Length: 281
Image 1 (tube, one colour):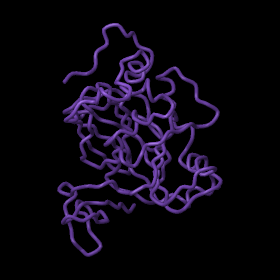
Image 2: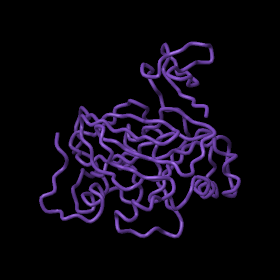
Image 3: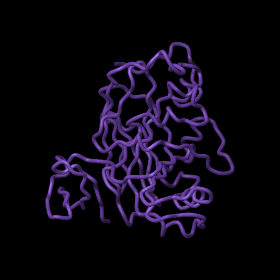
Image 4: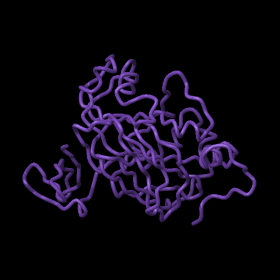
């Protein structure tokens, strides 16, 4: 299956094709994959994410799936890349990973049936739908700052075409330890359904991204942690967490909170809240 990556090569954003352990630009220049400065593999006009889709995640929260999927929006300013730093703002504690599969639109898409969606998909990449749950109380519903803060949408390493999403394993690792282990078999709504559903009222443009949901096991991470999401046939997306250099401003807007809803969401469902503390560092 062909894999395409965007990298920074001699100061310019360049599209490359993977050839073993090298990336080859259109003009013939080559760079080793482990030395390349990766960029997000696509440049979407919008990133749309589904709330709940994986059965294990629904069961973890003791929730019920709605009759149809619900969605939120991540601004493109949140985009990040393979090996990029994910910033946890100073003063925030509850930054969670969510390993996902990202659908990439290949042509203008509007008002199609699920059976037509495959022809409108360019390919797939790996995503990590990071969430800053410190703002969950103020952004409940919109998820704007929770999911849309800067650096919280890593995608990559590359765009893979010709990939069949059926029966594929998805795993997330923190510092080398498996923390999420799911499969596309547990998704309530598949990739084609999600594309067709959104395209009923929203025109999808080439490069647009749909995040298809995460399995159980999303938990907080801390500065210094390395988070990797691996999807069978798509590769492994690697990021590390750092602390932002400046605190959240206190002279404007709602401040980070630690309500029961924040803790419950960050820690995976109904928990005994007494004595809970954020992860170290």
